[in-house]
Image 1 (cartoon, rainbow, N blue to C red):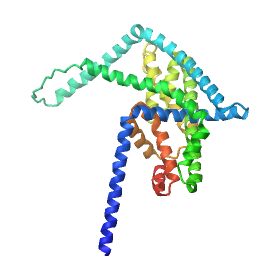
Image 2 (spheres, rainbow, N blue to C red):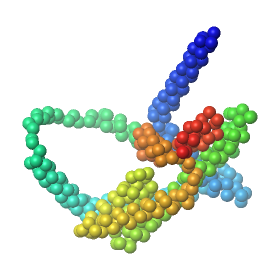
Image 3 (cartoon, rainbow, N blue to C red):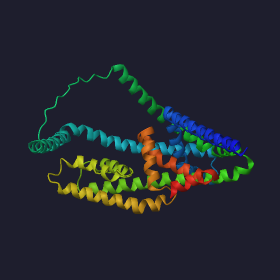
Image 4 (cartoon, rainbow, N blue to C red):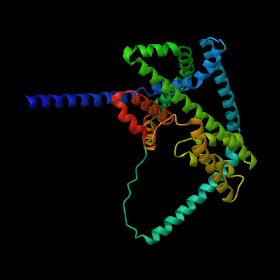
Length: 355
């Protein structure tokens, strides 16, 4: 009897494990297939959590929540439009100067690098014995126009879906926050609602702190970089500082990506490598201050994730959703950790993500 019971238990465990694997596969397939919709909803949630404190502040002045949500959303869209206009205006001027002022210099620099690489290859070929190898020449087939159009329409549809629905989703999330929270709590048994409420509050505090903190750090880096580029006399200091400050927050690669805008703009101004080394050193200093001082102070320890979990999350969600996936990777993983911390069966996973 005991052997029969053990075999039945083992069969149940295997079936449960296979069911979980199948369910996980279905979820991942849905996230990939419906990526445009899921990304739009998740990005809207981040924005709603960021704006919610302002709406609550207006409520203290007896402004109805719906009206407060509309006011905050309109003001936010106005500020984003102003920032977009300032950036676009300078980007348009830079685009006008690119063919005449920057493209020839960049082409000359590229030619020099290619010449050095060819010289290096010739030196290596003299040392390494050459082997006669046959090369197959293949004629690259052109991409069909139909396929290109379908690809373009797909990406255009994703952008239009994102831009069109995010403001509406944010407004509804802000205006109906209490109803949404109450409806969410009603999905769980009465004995679990207290823990669910605590988990929702923890997720809310974590997402709000993460988003607002990163925006503040990006703004500080952009302003400091703008001032630095203006002091050294670099062309387009506002545009270069804005792009460099935002790129500085890219995980792992930000310290190097932030060099690209001032390096490209500085090609027409500097003839030696010394100024570029100084720019790279200063931007590296800004990055160190942001990572070691600003991020801990402004973001704090809202996101309890270890470096390995962050790296895996960036790789996975970046592969799944591209650039937007890199933006959403850390909030998604941090939310998963909070949920795991409040579910007894999943607490070991939460501890692994945070250790």
